[in-house]
View (cartoon, rainbow, N blue to C red):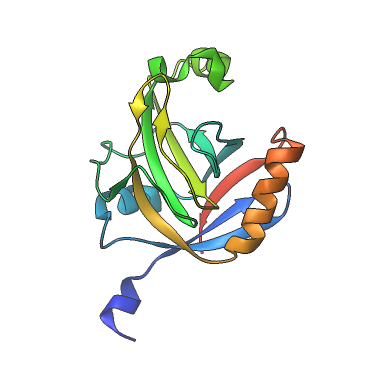
Length: 171
């Protein structure tokens, strides 16, 4: 086994209620600080949301888990299918009623929220009408099961996300 292979790390990304998952490789060479923060905090998960603005994205909003928020390493505003992205938002960025979870953000009294996202199809653009460009950190790439996950994400978009969770675990 080569040294590079020995250091490869993988996560399982799941829509738990639907029983669908995919496997992603951590991009430790491109986003080492973010990958270490996520890896050390696994397992992670929460209620799933489907994006309104970025298009083909599902995500969970989590309490901060890194000792210090990662810098903007390996950034993108145009994620591709299979990208796992990390975003940090303040409570004031999430209270606009158009997002649909302002009550949750206020109720939980969060000062910072981490958004872990999976992009499952192409033609995504990380721009928000309220804030402008929203670059994310690409910290992982799906290497198996994206087709199954994309089908489940389309079902989530059409059938709804209530009662569904998005989970990240070591694979």
